Amino acid sequence: MNKILNKLVWLIVPIPLIYLAMIWNKLPESIALHFDLNGKADKFGNKNELLITIIVLSVVSLLTYLLLKNIYRIDPKKYAAENKDRLLKIGFAISVFMSAIGCMLVYTGQHGSSGFAMGLILAGIGLLFAIIGNYLPNLKPNYFAGLRLPWTLENPDNWKKTHAFAGKLWFAGGLFLAVICLLIPSKIAIIVFFSITFIIVIIPCIYSYKLYKKQKE
View 1 (tube, helix red, strand yellow):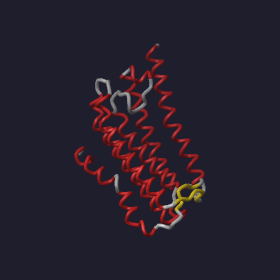
View 2 (cartoon, rainbow, N blue to C red):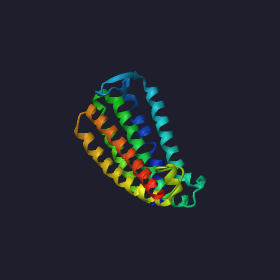
View 3 (cartoon, rainbow, N blue to C red):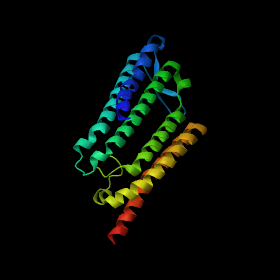
């Protein structure tokens, strides 16, 4: 499976650049590069600026994948190597997501405000949360991924219980965002998105601290 992902990522990362090359001559001279909360363009640029944006996004996507794939090599934690496969899959999911964002930017560059969909972006991030949440319960203690709190890093049992709880919360919260952000107006979707994100990050931290205090007593 890992060999397949290692090959697929080299095909997925350049897709936005290939897409851009295919429609290059069809792009208008003035391209929308930024949008407000209502989905209206508030910053414009030329085709070269879009090209630079897509190149940077593709490079970051690939570097993120390579970093997560190899980060276990420098992790001093005893069981860090056991995270190799899980981090590779998370890195692959992030690369797919970033390539999708790149394609959306190119599509929006061609079609303007009519091609921009904030709800779709937020839903995609929610789906990414769900994918990460699926791997959190099986993530072993390490210094680079997961809820790296002082008490989780010092206590394997705290790490295990915290990530089992966080995994369920991230998975459920991510799926909820993936659906609801497609069904409600953009302004409300942004509020819901940040509210749910705050909840799925803070609650596991509080749970972990309470578990730490209980174990200490």
